Amino acid sequence: MTFLSKAADGIVPGEIVRLDASRADEILDLESIVWSSRFPPELNRMNLESLDFSWAIGVQVPGAGGGRLAAFASAFSFDTPVPGGRVAVAGLTWVSVRPEFRRRGYLRALMARHFEDCREREVPVSMLFASKMAIYGRFGYGLGSVGARLRLPRGAALRELPGPAPEVELRFETASFEAHDGFVEAVDRQAGHGPAARPGWTGLVTPGLRQLLFVDEPPSDPRLERGRILMAWREGRPSGYALIRRDDGWEDGKPVGTATVRAFQAVDPASAHRMWRALLDLDLITTVVTPGLAPDDPLLQWLDEWRDARPLLIDGEHVRLVDLPAALEARRYAAPVDLRLAVRDRLLGHNQAVWRLEGGPDGAQATKASDFAADAADVVLDVRDLGSLYLGGRSAVSLADAGLLAERTPGAAASLARALRSDRDPGTAHIF
Ligand SMILES: CC(C)(COP(=O)(O)OP(=O)(O)OC[C@H]1O[C@@H](n2cnc3c(N)ncnc32)[C@H](O)[C@@H]1OP(=O)(O)O)[C@@H](O)C(=O)NCCC(=O)NCCS
Image (cartoon, rainbow, N blue to C red):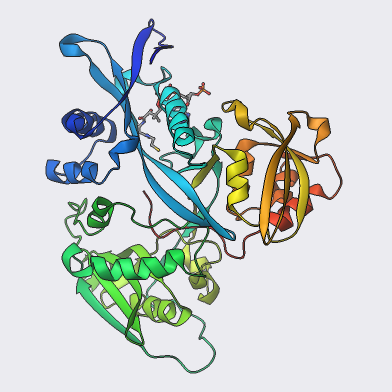
């Protein structure tokens, strides 16, 4: 398919193409220009090989030597927990446009093709982590999860857990794929598939991604050590891991090291508590930086003092409902709901309609009630905002308070809020 892009300096024809691994060198060249990578070529290649090429697409522009690749994007296939079930997701990733071809509509063209691919493969939801929050709202993505990144002082006090402390065995080791992949996978399997799974939780979905978790990236700071892993067992079974990297900072003869926790996952409160205690008590370390934690993460509930932690609120997963009824039917609803939602979707016309959502804890049905008409609905909202509600981390009432959801029937926003609510805040230990 050829499309014409809107270059300010003239019309540049571009063609959306499917890419396979034989184009690896071109893709790597494009990526190294776009992302100013400091990684050695072997690591960049390994990173590329972690991709699922069945989703790989690019924009090819004509020119000397048969033209070149001006843009690239791919995705991972996985399913993620949603309240009461799981939904198939395309995890959009590696979205890149060469600097000399920016702002000509190539991202827009990639997004259109990505949504077509989702439809063809019957994947109702697309999710991504954004380099910049401002980019994806226009494509119908809403902010589905948020994380709080903390900088904790050594020894930060944690509230004690009631009852006798169960036995938790801990071990620190130098992290390696060969030694620890199985352990991490065992914990992730329980965390992402068990009854305590968070909506939006994503595992390391290709073997390449699992390998990358253990790669020692070349340190931006020469004081940074090799990656370490803290492992926890309860009753002999893997119950948690933390991947950390410390620096060996010294000032005025005193140690002022920072331990950065790159990933943390535990499957029970006792393991998580013991692990944070250990991480907050590392010798030579004065600061522990956490990954983005879901707002209801146990650590935030145990900390005696938040103020020293200087929490930074960061955006997590951005969620796009590509097949709206299929997405709404993939989850369950905490309270009975029977509402007509008028959903605006400027990009995907099949979603723009009044949808009747009937559901509860045992099942749900979303059927088209009519073409889009605000006055035929109980609530009116943009597909982007429905995406932000989808994982259950945000309230429809808060959207109404912000003027982003119009309530046509009194009480409809509160009713929708109660139905969509998740018992746990959405979030994940791994980004893609
Ligand atoms: C971000 C990036 C992919 C945009 O590609 P692009 O081809 O220039 O985007 P388009 O011309 O298709 O623009 C599409 C829309 O997005 C907007 N947009 C693009 N980049 C944006 C940015 N960084 N911030 C805010 N809006 C942006 C454009 O203004 C345009 O809006 P409009 O259609 O509503 O007028 C590209 O600049 C890039 O590769 N950046 C570096 C890597 C990166 O950040 N990738 C995203 C990874 S999540």
